[in-house]
Image (cartoon, rainbow, N blue to C red; front, side, top):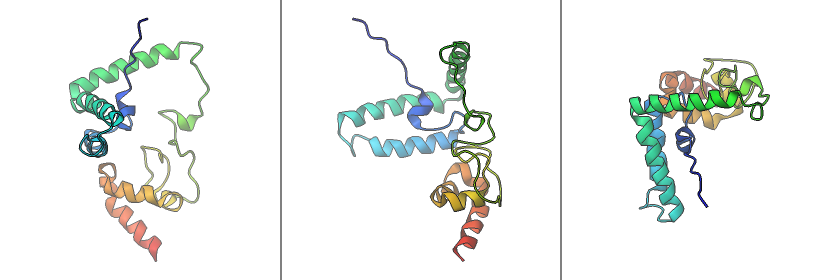
Length: 161
């Protein structure tokens, strides 16, 4: 009996958004590689996970390979869109071009810069602080939040008063 092999989605393997820039992909890869490195976790599952991480990073770190891979994904996505069995009704906030990320519509009064990426797309920094302060702390340290660091630090300081 022949088994069909289905290649994993490299963005899902690295747990990053397809729109993530190279800095974020590198940072996430390094963190995951530390977690699953054979010196830290000698289990068979960790070895397999590390192999997948290395394959995903090899494709996504090289701009040419990543471009080809994105084109391949687009072809698959376009082909599936015409399949009547796959078509589903998805709320607008969950679509790629929707106004909101996976967290859904913002809660509370907006204050500060509104994010245009990630799970809190459409939320202001002040709304995120009241809903998920740990995420805001993470964003302040991550490459994705580099341009927002001063504003996040100010919002967090004013909340501590």
